[in-house]
Amino acid sequence: MSTTVKVGVVGAGRVGAVLSAALRAAGHDVVAAAGESDASRRRIADLLPGVPVAKPSDVARSCDLLLLTVPDDSLHNVVSVLAAAGALRPGQLVVHTSGCHGLSVLAPAAEVGARTVALHPAMTFTGTSRDLPRLRGCVFGVTAPEAERATAESLVADLGGNATWVAEEHRTLYHAGLAHGANHLVTVVTEAMEMLRAAGGDDPASTLRPLLQAALDNALRSGDAALTGPIVRGDVETVSAHLTDISAHAPQALGSYVALARATLARVLTDGRQLPIRAQRITRALDAAAQRVRPGTTQEIR
Ligand SMILES: NC(=O)c1ccc[n+]([C@@H]2O[C@H](COP(=O)([O-])OP(=O)(O)OC[C@H]3O[C@@H](n4cnc5c(N)ncnc54)[C@H](OP(=O)(O)O)[C@@H]3O)[C@@H](O)[C@H]2O)c1
Image (cartoon, rainbow, N blue to C red; front, side):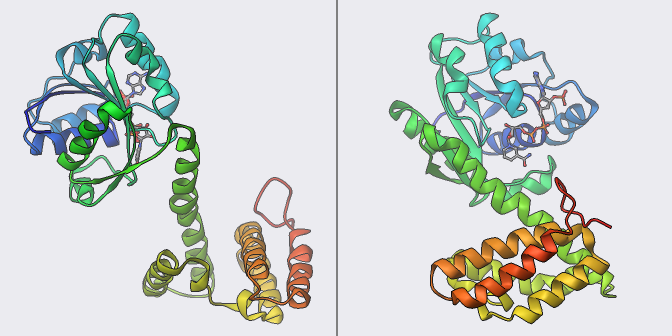
């Protein structure tokens, strides 16, 4: 934003403390921060030295740009309480960073005349200074009324990122896509490391890193066309052998291996890279393994 803005943050969690520090570095004036826990107080001391700690309503009254960086499930309650307390005012910019919420959660602020923006950094945060350089080039999923688009864009630019527009009605799907990609990736990678460790590897991360980086890069570039491995090749016996050894040595991963193998198989069948006859044989092997997974878990029945 072209002028210096008075910024307030409720609360100084992993995201709030880091984004406020980034706005401060961009020349804005962080006037107050709210956060009760020791962790939030520590983040304020580390990332926002000299910024006074205040209760949420005082933070809201003291600023022109209010960052609401509270847990998703608390957001509606926090904005309602601030609006009911008369802590929000017409023309004030009220911004949240939730991925799954759009503008409707900020309706109590809009009703008193505040300008509202949903601005979600598509990034994972530690709440430390390590996050600051990662904001450069980070994409922010933004939902904003037409009149606030230029402001939102310039706020994202001040944070070092790039905006992508997300329609209000697609906010949850947008967030589900990010969670599926980033959160479930963590589970898959962790299970892969457990298998390599069970296979005697003393540094599974180093073994996986070049392979996974190449696979991720190829998938982001080419989607399904990046797929290699036994399912697309139709190596039924290899898949069966995997299932046997995972059952024996890494049973905690059997359920997710079967589920992801089924999803992979469905995709190569649909796009014609796998013959139905081979796909049926793989499906039979997966069905047999799935019988051994305890319902409601990914674990094998012993
Ligand atoms: N973490 C990520 O990687 C990430 C990435 C992108 C977007 N986001 C989004 O950013 C938002 C914040 O997430 P986060 O991970 O930073 O959360 P967090 O680390 O758990 O921090 C939440 C902050 O909100 C405060 N808070 C909690 N309940 C409150 C309430 N009822 N009233 C006032 N303050 C309250 C907490 O204060 P106390 O410490 O005193 O309890 C804390 O300062 C969420 O919408 C999340 O979806 C998170």
